[in-house]
Image 1 (cartoon, rainbow, N blue to C red):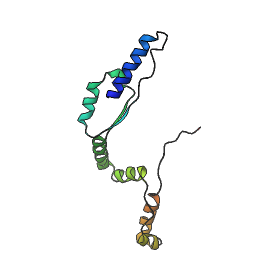
Image 2: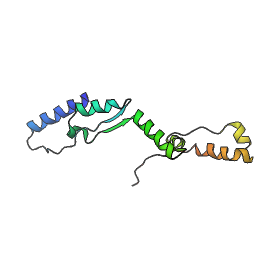
Image 3: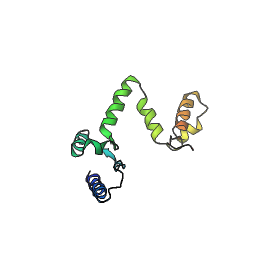
Image 4: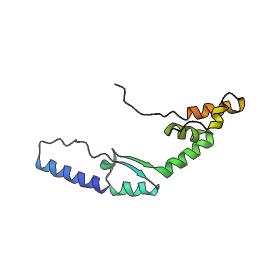
Length: 124
């Protein structure tokens, strides 16, 4: 928040010195990860609404509680999101050896699927 205020002060100083400068310049965009939900209130109170517009703020506790509540409506959602965010290693030897066994077939398929990840990319 201090960096954002400092950069905002520099921008205002430059606007005053250079009257031809555009007043609609983009402000500094901040991406923050908060640990506690009440930290977001402190963040909002420390900056003006104009300074907050472009920022991205994620609160880990709020995200976890939201996922937990959604998993009550849709069981398995947390496992799905976790598997999409991070990949895993190869299946255990026991699962690999018994992949044709009907009791282990679903487990082998699950482990194989856990090896994939989703990435956000821009397509030209």
